[in-house]
Figure 1 (cartoon, chains in turn green, yellow):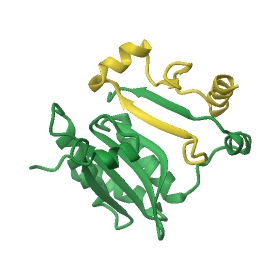
Figure 2: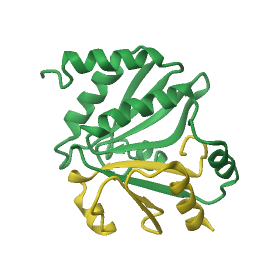
Figure 3: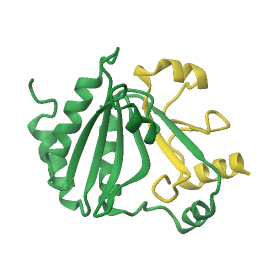
Length: 147
Length: 60
């Protein structure tokens, strides 16, 4: 299959990835059933992680790996979960991309990979202070379009 | 925010593939952020403190 990311994009992303610090593992969840964007999303994610040795990917299937999907609260395909890969395993930061991360979403994905790699949210002290005391679940869904 | 708290999960949803969610929450412009399945909502790319305030309102 031809590459989805052209040489220009690959060069730009590689340049951005020079700032990667700690390892990040992407968990891809696809599905064999009615998932027109699964293959493109998996291929795109694999091409992105191939641009740095600090990045890795694991490929799961929503149905065949139902236990892992449940563990990561994934119920749609394609979904990408960004985790911090530490010496003692994967740390789930709760960051998910549902659908193919094309257009603006592609930049957001690259940005989030850098964020997770830095292990620093970059948020203000005020926001961090509130989040440190948060004792109820908060589920954010950011709706975006690829254009 | 999801990085700072295990209580927070942030999902970026590419809308053209998941129209049923879009209709469910009445999304019209993007980015449109739903908090706890519609209990709170922020439209547009707003400053961090605006989103924080809306989250605080939802969990209060």
